[in-house]
Length: 111
Image 1 (cartoon, rainbow, N blue to C red):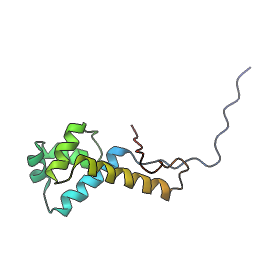
Image 2 (cartoon, helix red, strand yellow; image 1 turned 90 degrees about the horizontal axis):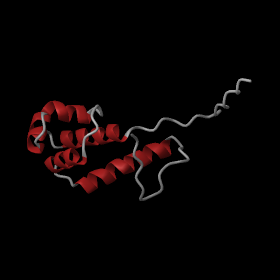
Image 3 (cartoon, helix red, strand yellow; image 1 turned 60 degrees about the vertical axis):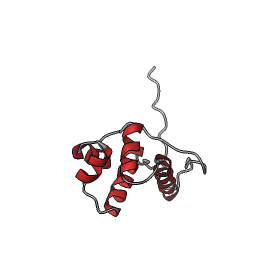
Image 4 (cartoon, rainbow, N blue to C red; image 1 turned 30 degrees about the vertical axis):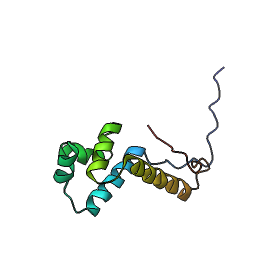
């Protein structure tokens, strides 16, 4: 006998944005807020402009060392950057009515 297919949820959960996309958006906004080009910020962080561009677009999943270097080049701490991205993820989860929105003080990471 062939097993019957699993029931499909009638109301699928909205897809949450990935951490790397939210991080990239935040870094781009910080860089634009400073009026800097990719080249200037990347140079201070010790990265190539191409790599920083890929991070900002969410195409790369940078190491914590790379994130810290870019944060430092933009004049923010790694902690402040992480908190800001986590708060933006929470806000997006709340907008989508996600029942699994992270509790205050927790961080949700998507791989």
